[in-house]
Length: 431
Image (cartoon, rainbow, N blue to C red):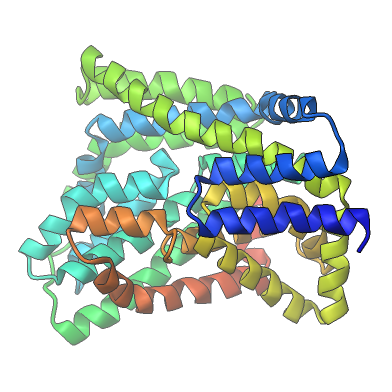
């Protein structure tokens, strides 16, 4: 066994052991990297250098700004208005409240960019509302957690910014545009699954569609939805960078939440900012420690070795694409979203591009794979949040989610093998 092979084994095995021992992911990433560096005889000052280098990025500043915007808008009374708008759009259908849940997640995801925030915010309102109207509690929770993954695809998503940084210069504006159609496709797929289940279980319909009611709710929700328009149009139009647009969005969200919707006062703003700091500290520590791990992977040429290993198994691009998805889905079962993006992107992206997958398309694939991972045990954070919010045992939620897993896998396969779904808007508007 060569020195490089031993170092790779130390890095990966120690990391996996700590993951299965339920270490915090940041500790697992950092400690396994330190063990690897010590074996190679490299100075531990490398740890500090790589951590600082990992978070010393202008484009990365968009991440804390987008998270802050989502926290402020989510605490500012936006949820109820978006639910009312979704109800005016699709509440008339069979299983109307399930459809409202899914469409509201699409709207709210464009503000929060977080599946966990979506589940906690909308779920606390919609799950009790659905149960009261005759829907099963496990079904209501399953709809909530699966639809929350739309928020990962609909811009502005801070996970897309992390991917753009990890991929080395992929356009954030193109990634934002690429997420709209896949997010809508996921919503339609989940609505189809909900409709079939609602028909079988005789879940109720809502009130008949009223165009007047729709216009009224659209007018009320306009200020919330305008935040997304400002960010996406600004970035795509080249008026400002993703970081600048995120900073503007924070100021805008403060104005809307405090002065227009009046869902927050100054005391509430400070409390929301405290919550933001908790979230940001976790995300930035993960990015910093993952930078060390990425440095070890690069110096040991792990991406090249992984590419050769996968291509050695098969040269069929269809099988390679399926294998990439399988790897990401398995990682999603044991790791959180940000570290998967940070660690897996440098390894898997070269393999994806070698079989003709565009880096932007692959970014959407990674995000959806990680979204499915958030719903799968044993580490599925959104699964646990949904179970807690809905007060339903996790085993029942998983069972109720099985049909929706199928819907999400179908969408994933469509995104993998029909690149136009992801690339249509970027190719149309980013030329």
